[in-house]
Length: 67
Image 1: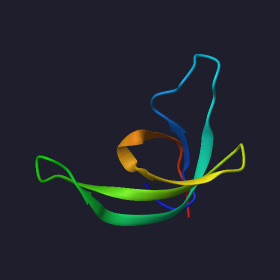
Image 2: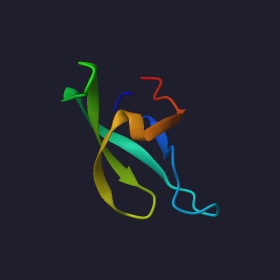
Image 3: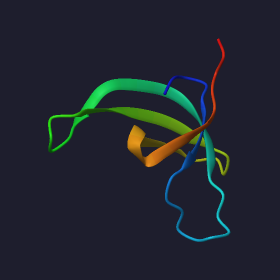
Image 4: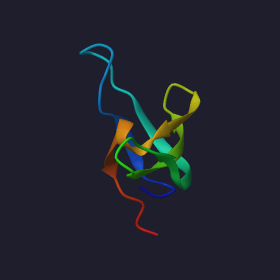
């Protein structure tokens, strides 16, 4: 993932929920998983107005920033 990518949560809380956001910042190799795999932490601003910090494995990319 990179700054400007449009993302959506992989797992929704309900079937009618659509949660879309834009990546504001990427902190590379922030998390170390149980099998020594490193994951990035994303700062995401969501369409509903909230900004959160999420591991990159929690979201899927909908559209890529072409810059």
